[in-house]
Image 1 (cartoon, rainbow, N blue to C red):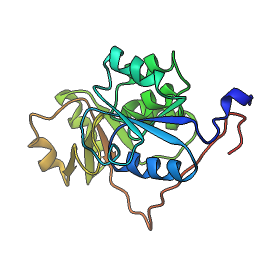
Image 2: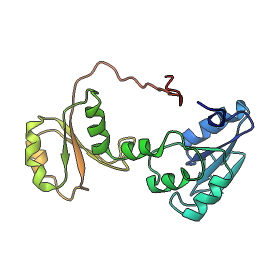
Image 3: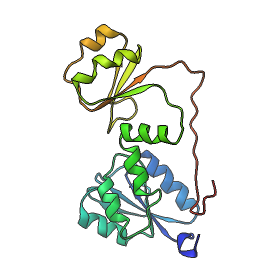
Image 4: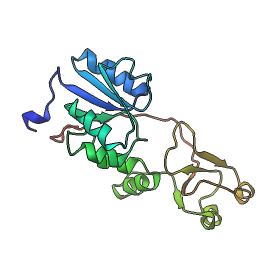
Length: 202
């Protein structure tokens, strides 16, 4: 890690997204002595109400992104439903943490599950569903199962519970592509935050 990789208090952190997570991040950053500049398509929004400065504009507008980058020392994002292409443009101007490649993987459930499987993470049984022709094969997963949109789903949005084969056969007009996941029994759900420095320290 070099000195230019470290952003000391007084630096400006650019946060893409104006929601609740952006607000919490901005408040925490300000307590540590950092300035926060928020990019949001909406104003006012939770994060823009507490940020030191704000850019209002689209996540994929090159002019907006270049102006936003010029006002920040480092850029991060508060949620995954932003433009991966826009983030790639920002990376030409400023460090982006986490990297845009991480966003690209996490934005698509098929890409994400494939990557997690490749590195040995245990997942509930799942299948990609690219069209209606893939639905009959889902019976091999077993029921009940859940169909999920591959993109833009969050907090239960874009999910369809399928209790049995009859319900599966009755489905139509689904927003393909989808991911089918077998529902599994579990004792508890844990949420874990892991932070890795540029030198590999976890």
